[in-house]
Image (cartoon, rainbow, N blue to C red; front, side, top):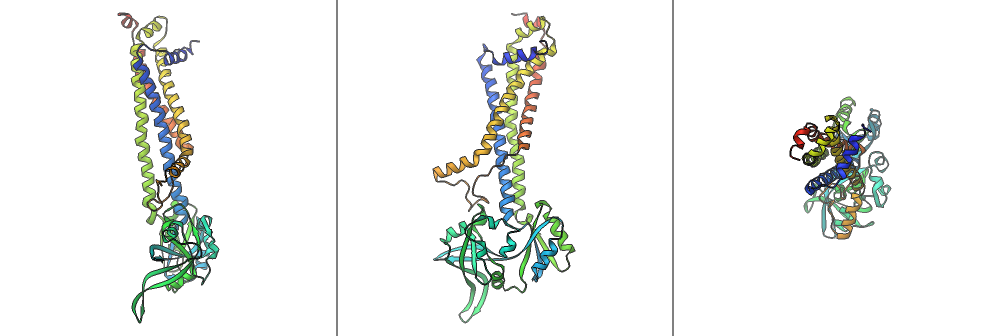
Length: 413
């Protein structure tokens, strides 16, 4: 009974009606503040994790992890691919030829990055085949001059399957009429949607057609590689360039999207620290609550001391009360945060559908919806940090209560 006395009295103080209603209000406010702080922290970090995941899986699933260039163009990409795939950490390799141009259809013009690919090899290095919404990637055949383009690009040009779009390349061609841009008619045979900025500016054609349009001497402009670990790509590309026989140069995803990835990582850290201040403020409210409770309960503390309660028992009573406030707030905040993190994508999509307003447009942002990924490691870190802050908040008021002298407290009673 003696060991459970601090628990019994601590919970009784927590639930008892007080003469000073302001203390009850501060107690409830600190609990609500802890709940909101934990819930918002879990939600925001989950959204940042979602952006990080989408960058890795969607954007970096479409763009090359690494690119190997050969002087004068890749003469035999299949032989080079076999050699490159022998390096540890390389998943697969495929040919790549890039052309920048303008696409025109019925008076509408849009800039586009036209990429030449081998449809069979592309399946091993890109997520593109999994995101074809209309048509087929296998429709890209050598000499057919067919094109598969992003959904937003097709919408801007008002294109459908079977339409013929005009591709204008910046390379000039001499003719009796003067210098003219190079022009080629392409047939739309497929549309893809990855929910990212690439939907608005990317179109793919067969590697052989790209070779003819670019007037390459080799089979391809470069060789793209997919790595097991994104973060080893820069070092792996350098190793390949150094060890493969021939004159090669390389590039990797960090040169094109590395800043975006670092920005998301930094924002997650900074937002996490800032939101942790909300939890700290709620913990500070626990200090205020307990200090006022100690002042309000001085007579009770003195009576307990005269009945034989030790300073340690008094200290434990008020630590139980403070920890109970923090624990309830953290528990409620964790539950609300998890529910919000698991449903925020659907809720935002429903609001967008209801209001007709798209919060994240693929024209502006690198993805077109609000992602969320709940990591249990983040939940554990947040809840443990909040509980530690709650515990620290109880120390000063509890020590102050344990030092109250019965004679002094009962003098004016």
